Length: 495
Image (cartoon, rainbow, N blue to C red):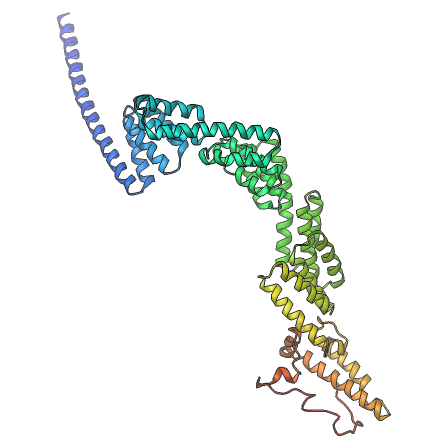
């Protein structure tokens, strides 16, 4: 029995000693923790002063975790959040600081400012009134109370104007409200609706975009934005915003339904553009026609498809079809200079230079800065001027797209037909000689890549006026006439 008592006494002594050791260790840990907290606060202050906000925030996080009872620690972290523009994160810290120290008026002023910017005028008013109860002469609190009243009065009047369908009046009243409460999503949504009513979709979008961040899980805003972008023809932005909606909830039926439509149309349009870049114009046309079937109700897409089909037909030198489709496209979209450009190119291929000049001139009036249109007009004017002189393509009866073999074949046929030896009278021979010279000149020009390039640019490489001072060799017929001797009875090589 005595032995048990001595054993129990020993155990109790050991436990007491252990508790003393633990207490000493805890005191040491607390002392170290307090020192670390002070170090974090000091580092946070220095980094904040240096503008290194992210690093400062990290130190304030550590300080808050180390001491949940220091109101200044929460307040300082809130100051960093505000400097970073993270007002939502700052608000809980300011509220915690006020909870720990109810007479902390600096925190109340800060919180009241945030609440007013959020449009929470009732709660903001409570903070400002608390400050004024403590110090009735506080100028900042007095000013902010006036702003609270201004927001409430303007907002009441704006809603009254909206109810009477005075949308322009509502917009004017909301200007000041949004200036004072820029983080209030409801006010921006209201003004967005007003812009929609007056048909200004661009401004409606501008007001609606910030609300996706001002509200948590704002799928409705993402869906509405996607539909608005879709309506104005920006399918890429539409797709981007509807994806954001699905990130928040992949099972959202409205968002998923719209996503399928936008995705299908986007694929068709992107595929068509890729085919154009690859110069696979026939395949591109099929894709554009498919896009019209995918979205027949939003006119901007059918207009765009018609414009691009016009472009593809012009580029693939289907001149008659190009002129027809381009004309239809321009009737739908009369302010589009690129339709006129493509139709002008088709007219050039069709050798209707006057019409080409007219289209390029009209396109220039719509977009005078476009270098491609300016160059096209200059080229069409040169071709028109040249056509009124000599047209080497017409002389040989070949298209402007004819290759060298086609040019030579046409030349041989006409040279045999108009060789002077084929005619009897002197008058017929002289007429045939002129024809033959033109035929031979046309063949020389159109089989010479450099001279043909000049012809296609609207110049006549055999015109003496174009060769003065150039140092280039003179091409016949200006210095050489194969029939100058008057003897037409010889064999002629038609190569």
